[in-house]
Length: 202
Image 1 (cartoon, rainbow, N blue to C red):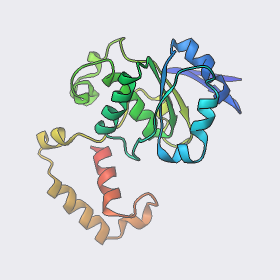
Image 2: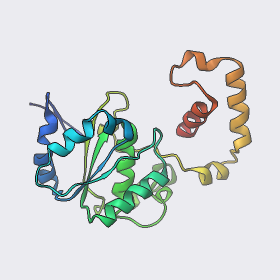
Image 3: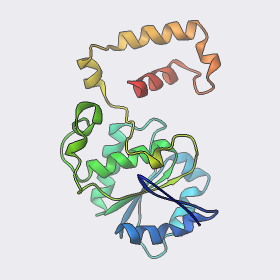
Image 4: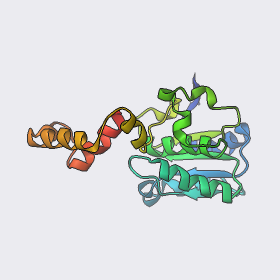
């Protein structure tokens, strides 16, 4: 077993998902909510996580969008509260992990998530009440499992306050598509892809 301590504890090993129940016990989680997405569920990885938690009462939110939104966080938080969960397990890539981070705050703190955004000076408002979270990353792309922050789409109010409008977005996207910039980035195929990436950048 390889252990890395950076911000949190990271465990590397083939089949490390079998340590999930042990990690729940270490984190004080007895009724976890698993946050994941339809793709992870479809390929059977969600089931592997469930199989690693025998005897535990487990709730599942499997509708994380490819770019997590505050609406998705609120929907998952509703499940968390209704099922009397006391912790989170994120199974997936950065989207599921970021969504779970949002739930960890939304389930234990009041007000909009923007109230806790670092860019708006909200980090000190996050208290020790935040729900414990275990991340089971299925990709090596984002590093969200070792980062303290999360990117959530739902910042229209902040963009408006900055004087940014959707017309500005449309102008940038139209120009980029016309210049075939999207051909240099395999993640971008449509104007909607540009829009999502611009929102993340903001």
